[in-house]
Length: 69
Image 1 (cartoon, one colour):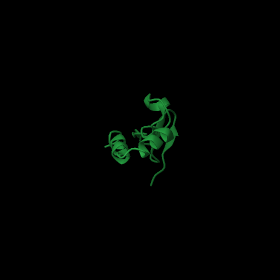
Image 2: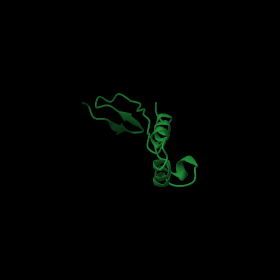
Image 3: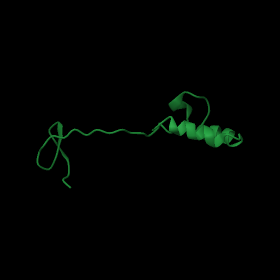
C-alpha cells in the first residue's frame, strides 16, 4: 500500500498522482442529544424514559433505521 502525502496544496500518492479523498463522517448522527437534533433533554434521559415504555425497542430501532440505511 502506497502512502499518501501532501505536495504543495494537493494530496498525492507515492508516485505523485493527485488523489481526491471522499467519505462520510457519521459521528453525531446517532446521538439523541439536544444540541445535535433540537429535541430537549439528553440521550440517557430519553433512553431511560423509553426503557419504561413497552415499545422502547421499536422506538430505538426506528430512530437508528432513520439515520443510516
